[in-house]
Length: 123
Image (cartoon, rainbow, N blue to C red; front, side, top):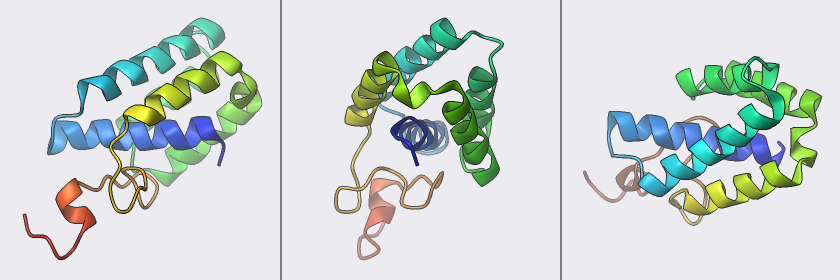
């Protein structure tokens, strides 16, 4: 999986978890908004890439949405865009690390709250 897709998938899962369980960190929201603004400016609001990103936001746990987004990243050659890659790196740096340094998703699109990362720890 390319770095844009993996970072956006992790961020959308993190942000979705924030609305359901734990408030998403402000830095994550801001870094995600910055990456999305680059997508909008570079590829347009009506682009397939932007549309796939918005669909992934609505269903961050959907493997089909992640696959569609990955296909659009590839088609747009977004993973070759230095500005977008830099924004993805900044976003990745804001995501919380849980479960021995993995991103907030051990399975694509499945947010893991910090307490759930270690089954020996209770709620």
